[in-house]
Image 1 (cartoon, rainbow, N blue to C red):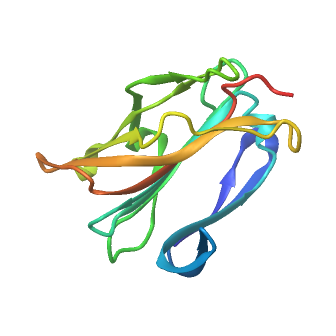
Image 2: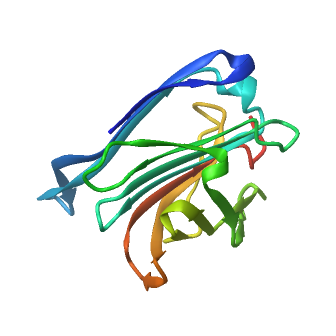
Image 3: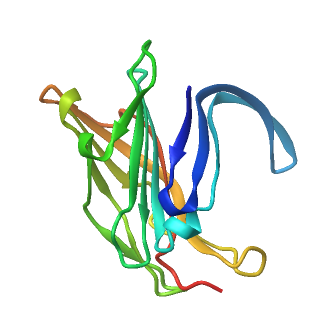
Length: 191
């Protein structure tokens, strides 16, 4: 779990928390049948005025690795395309959460997807590198078209969805090495 206050410069401050592996159970209705399901959920919430500091949107990553490691990264863009706010949290299996400064990781875009509906061009594929952990995480969207058009209700078009996870740690590559979710805002026209 991570708990934390975040200084967002001209926007003041924010408070953020995550519960990265919450036991979850429920029931799905599938063709009229009730199907019980169990698993884990990632629950988080953040307060703050990110439009003041993130007028260009943000890229947010949530990763659960099969070895028990959890990672969340936030890259908040200003309207001019710079990144005034970049931070993360690493939770190694069985250890306390560690704040990650922007200098402790890198995120490289490895591909793009263009929405046929809105014309927005989204990053689609990433390579995350944490040098002190000798850890590379490669994320690829499980489905390219994960754009959500909520203009009728919230006025926002954004992309968010599940990712295929590949991990390279200590020189060893593992496919299907966890679960991940990415949220992208600010790439599509508003309103």
